View 1 (cartoon, rainbow, N blue to C red):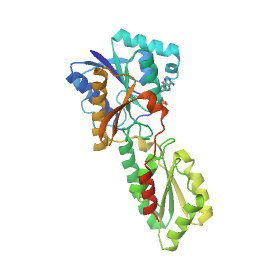
View 2: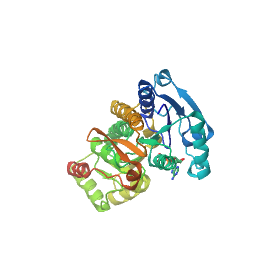
View 3: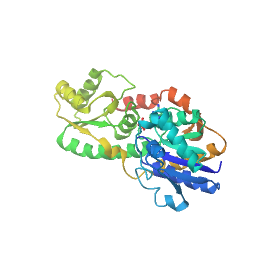
View 4: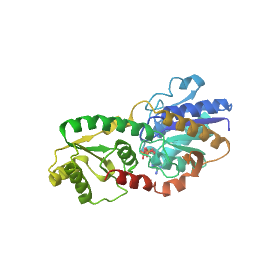
Length: 319
Ligand code: ADP
């Protein structure tokens, strides 16, 4: 293999630039030419392709977002769309592709691999909702953004003796909410993977109030519904003054944490090694701090699991 391509697809995540940098530099280190494809699969169809050099990824490791831009492409889901994409790859002589994104992007990678075109997936999403890896690129940064917000909200919650409901991202996964709740000292963490009785949430709040607690923080994962609905229900059930904050897209931006930069560098470089070793249709990931790779088909079929020990601990610490 002498020429490879790299693209970012689906939702962006902090650390994607560090992953692109790792792919580009590792490839060049191995004497491989590397091409950047802008705008995800849509850009591939349209031939939005440029060769990247060592300097193309300079001053990028610390930046959020993705320098290759991202897009969603309905056309790529069609046979004709993918045919156009393959024509572009052949035109540029690109022999293998690294796709940085979430599970939707991996479905696209799998389709290309099945059509005889080797692809390797790199998990990049703040949601941490992908099986086969303990962490996805962007999760740690988003988590730290949430923690910063919780700490600030806690100040005003204390001053006004209020209960705060904070809705965080994560799509169908509760990882961001769980980790943020545990590290932010939340009273309750409401996530899609665990069905907690509403009465338990209410009772915990009431117990805290009777103990003289001045404020409470409750983290709601977007996957369980609206933070505002929970706010209304909690205020009604407890008569405590309640406020709701939906953190929204600030969770997706910002400079990646050291942890995300290291993860992105390791996974990006490993994706290049995997392609060069002749692997295809695999996702690179990290498990117990060791680099691993798994079949994309398996990763897509498996459900990402919440860390049950952490959930139990969060409950024990918020009595
Ligand atoms: P994410 O990768 O963050 O989960 P999406 O679910 O939006 O984001 O997927 C990103 C892109 O991957 C889609 O816009 C589409 O181009 C491609 N894709 C998703 N599902 C498929 C599929 N079944 N076949 C081919 N391409 C797909």
